[in-house]
Structure formats: structure tokens, C-alpha cells
Amino acid sequence: DAKTTQPPSMDCAEGRAANLPCNHSTISGNEYVYWYRQIHSQGPQYIIHGLKNNETNEMASLIITEDRKSSTLILPHATLRDTAVYYCIVRSTGTASKLTFGTGTRLQVTL
Amino acid sequence: KAGVTQTPRYLIKTRGQQVTLSCSPISGHRSVSWYQQTPGQGLQFLFEYFSETQRNKGNFPGRFSGRQFSNSRSEMNVSTLELGDSALYLCASRPGQEVTGELFFGEGSRLTVL
Image 1 (cartoon, rainbow over the protein chains, first blue to last red):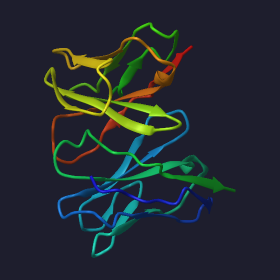
Image 2: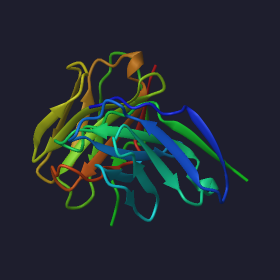
Image 3: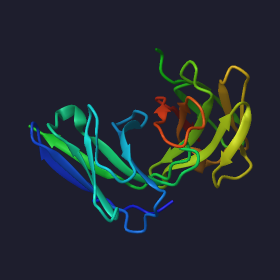
């Protein structure tokens, strides 16, 4: 699986959009981009995934650049409950159970 | 619908002992995978089971083993415990072996080795 690079930490004011970047310059054509988050002392929670098109669900939007070398997770209206570590994962086709987690971005949402 | 259930949630063992952790997946899910989370190494894949067969394995020594039962429940075992095995052990389940899709994680079993 391709390696990902994320900033170690970010701050966001409550109610504002949180834009979390991820670099995956070595991604190959069949690799998906996944985002999970982990709130302190809980198991990771799936957020969204995509291959090449932008994706949106009730939690977030995923914007993947045309060359697929980077992506951005957008939380449109961050709340205090969104404070967590966010992991960007690139996974090849095959079983979706074997994920390679990096160090993630610690997002702190403040009042 | 109940989520992934892991037991016990907390346990303390001493070096040299062995431990067995249990995971009950979401009803209807047949794939169960295990992860180890430590402050130093982060989240690392241990293994995955589907239909009682190990399908994938991470880079862990043979002291780490697992199994899956016909009802999809899974157990993992760590023998001859070392201090470095202190970690949060997470179980995750999926309906099957689809190419894409999300993993549903449990709350984890926190193991402390003294």
C-alpha cells in the first residue's frame, strides 16, 4: 500500500469547516483512499473512502486531486465532538480489512 | 443492531503468562480482523479471519495467534507475554471479503503486562 503523509496536528474553530490534507504521491491506479478517525480511547470509526471521484456522505466530503497524489477530507461544520485523530489510508484492491494506519492528524476543535 | 463487542475491556497480566481476548462481530458479519495499537507503533494489523480461516496475517511473531468459530466469533491469543505486548487490541468486523467498504471496530481490550 502507498505511504501517506499528514500534518501531525491541526486546530479548527467550532462551526467552521475543517480541511484535513493528505499526501499520497506514490498512489497507484487501483488504490483507494480511506479516512478513519479515532476519538480518545475508542476504536477507529470509518468516515469515507474514494478512488478517483470526489465523495460526500453525511459525515464529510472527500476531495481527491485529478492526479490522485493528494486528497482533502472536509468536515463542513466542525463540532467539539469531531476532536479526534484522523487517519488517511491508501489501500490496494484486495481485502479491505488489512489497513496500514499512519500517524494521522490530531484535530482539535475549539470554541 | 449491536456493534462489535470485545471482552474483557481491561486486563492485567505478568510476563510469561498467556492471554485470550474475545471478539463478537456485528450480527451477519463473517470477516473479523485484529489490530494492535501502541503509542510507539500506532495501529498495526495482526490478522484477518473469514469463514473460520485465516486470510491475512501481519508481521507479528508466532506468539500471536487467533481463530474464528462457526458463529463468526473470534479469539486471539498471546502466549509468553512480554512487556512490549502491553497495548490496546482492537477487533473489527465486515460483512464479507468485499473489495471496498468500511471496517466496524470495537472499543478494544486494553492489556497491561507487568
